[in-house]
Structure formats: structure tokens, C-alpha cells
Length: 318
Image 1 (tube, one colour):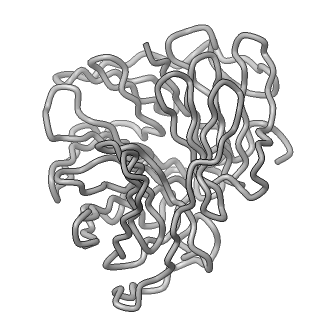
Image 2: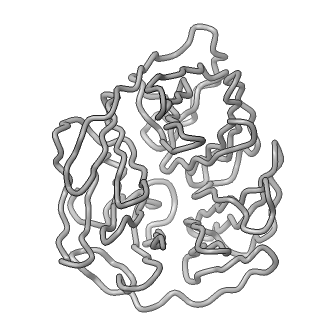
């Protein structure tokens, strides 16, 4: 990584720290009080697959080799090993990807964590071949082989679905991406959408049981994406006037940055205001770090589409 914005994949805020995960599977933390930015070097030595923020400023980190660590008060502690099982022999073999490069649809040779979240007192880990659940009460793992491979992507989003199912969104620029619905009890995989470059998934603030997905791609004269409602196995657009590069819940509204505007959706209407006030801080091109929401620019979409910077969003938790 030759500069802080290079291939920045995802950001989030925990307490006074801004956490930054890069496509090269490197994790940085930026202390917003002291202004210090550092690469995280806890006891583990393998690459960082994913991180998830817990209440009280704690951070879960899943590593390439399958171990999960938790950061509490600046100390890293080992939590558990993911029982990676690889590809189940009964899995349906899906067609080979169009391009065989990381971020464009490759199936990793070794199993790894795509994304991780907390759902119903369980750590849920999604890999290319399996869905794993770790009970925080019993300390036991459940492994559910997937009905088909999940190819990788430039960005992968994850959100809880109905009845222990999981939605996974894939951003591959103008190449096929979309959303998969994974049944938690059987591992069945349903393609809800196979086209959109999905950049995030959040619950709809006013429609119980419905989620909102953001999608965005800009490439030369090509500009598409927007906001979509997801319910069950259906995905329907309700805003298509701008490519959207991230989405976050803030109170009773959703915030979604486009290339030049920040959109607010309260469940009934969409308002927009211009993106402005960016400056370089510690090599990061970002908005005012003292505000409720923080925008950081990245060139990650240059890997599959746009050569310009696009914004990522983090929202402080109350």
C-alpha cells in the first residue's frame, strides 16, 4: 500500500477510532483524538479478512488462517478458530468467472472469511463455500455447506435475512455482481439479483422486514446504480438517479454517498446535499472528522471501473 487511500475497502467508527480495512487485507486504526494512524499489529501474523464493531469500543477481527481475535481497551485477545471445512463435495459447481483475478470473481484456492457479523448472539461467518455460526453462549460452531460457490468481489456486503438467512451483496463494477440470499438451515443459495454492483445493505428504517441496498458504478460514460428495496427473494429499485457507493443507518434515516452528493432516506422521501469540505488528514482525503458522520475517499473502484475517488461512509454510534 503506497498511500492511505489506495484500495481502501471499508471504514467504520468505534468510540474515538476510525477503522480502515484495505483490499490487500490490511487493517489500520486512526485515533480521532490524537490524530495518530497506525497499522494494527496484534499477536496474529496472517492477513486480516474482516472486522466487526461491538458495543463499548470492542472490535472483532477474522484472520486469513481462520482465527478470530477481539480488541478490548487496546489489548488483543484470542477468541476462537473458525472450523474451515473447504468445499463440500455435494455443492453445485457454478460456471467459471469471466475474469480470474482477485475482485473480479475468483474462487480462492484456500477457504477464507468473506464477511462476519453478529446475529442472535452468534458470530456469523460467510466463506466462499460455507456459512458458519459460533454461539457466544455455548462456544460451539455450526457449519452449513453452501449450495453453490460464492465468487469473490471488490467489496462484499452482508446483512441478516429472515429466519436465520443471510443476504450477501457483491460489487464487481460493471461485471456481474448482485445479491445472494443464503438459507441458514439448508445452505440453499438464491440469486436475488445478478447484475448490480452492490456497495452496502442496511435495514429500511420504516419498513419492517425490508432492507435497502446501495449500488454504484461509474466508468467513462457509464453511470448506474441507486437504491433498492429487498424483501425475501425480490429486489426492486426506488431510486436510480445516481450511483451510490456506501450506505449506513443513522438514527431513523439512511445515509448514502454518491459521487457528488450525500443522500438521506427517511423511509418516505430522499433528500440530497452536495458533498464538500474534504481535506487531507494524515494522507486520508476525508470530511470533518469531528462530525457525526465521516466520509473518506478511496480509489478502490479504479480496480473495476472509475479512476476517480469515490466516498466511503462511517457514522458514529450514540
